[in-house]
Length: 221
Ligand code: GLV
Ligand code: MN
Image 1 (cartoon, rainbow, N blue to C red):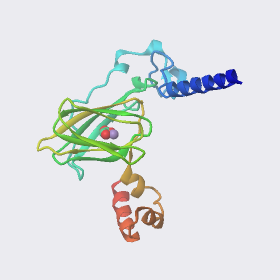
Image 2 (image 1 turned 135 degrees about the vertical axis):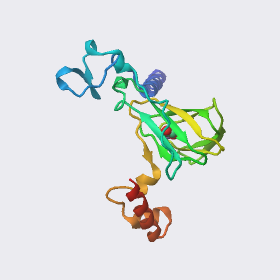
Image 3 (image 1 turned 90 degrees about the vertical axis):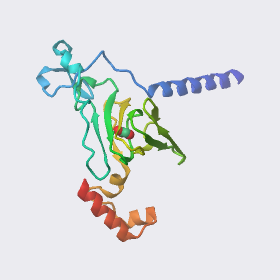
């Protein structure tokens, strides 16, 4: 009986460790450049892959993250997220990157990345950043150039430029397509709109306030 229990414990432990390592899959080949022309495609793994013998150095480089994004908007913030869609050489490699610009007072509003953990490096400015875990605990800190913060997979996070100068950061992701769900938009900017009564009850708001927010976010989407 003892040995059966021991065997069971061992199997459960092995299962747990295999589940933990399954979280971060390795690429299935050295690379797999995305291509739209199915005539030159040979492998399928997410996106269709270009025949590796036809790959060129240009497939593995991307230019333009030196160019500031336009922060002349309500949030005083903008970003350029480079995923497999903009950079086909990322296909199957599990990485993406973003340039993030903040004018003084700029806000990157609360959002989640459903498929990627984010590592944010502040290059310029004074950035207040944080995320909220599944117990609703807020982890936040003021960041300066050279500081990093990690936003774990699918956690609600945000940044505010609390300095007097422009802010700049670069974000890397462990997904070729991390996705972005901005919380305000996913509540109020949906198409079709979520029942205002349901939102009003859920958020303890007057239904007219919900309708006002829906009008605002639906027109800005
Ligand atoms: C920052 O959180 C970003 O997703 O660009
Ligand atoms: Mn983010």
